[in-house]
Image (cartoon, rainbow, N blue to C red; front, top):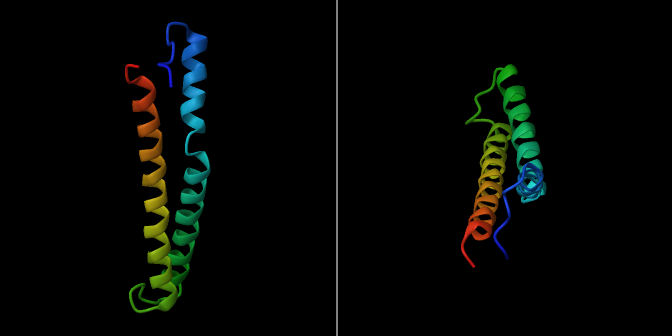
Length: 89
């Protein structure tokens, strides 16, 4: 891949848009899973149950771990893409 030309504001904006698009589905999925997991954990806590003793609470913790793992993978994917684009040919 050729190194992006960042000499003009339009080229910078185009490259910024390209970076935002990299990993977007993973970021959206990760955020959705983290949000749902947080809702499950809040539900368990507001019903006076221990998160670690409730099967629903443990499911929420597992979903939280999966969601954050997906988010970190999306960030890593974008970082790798950026490094490859900025590397000399």
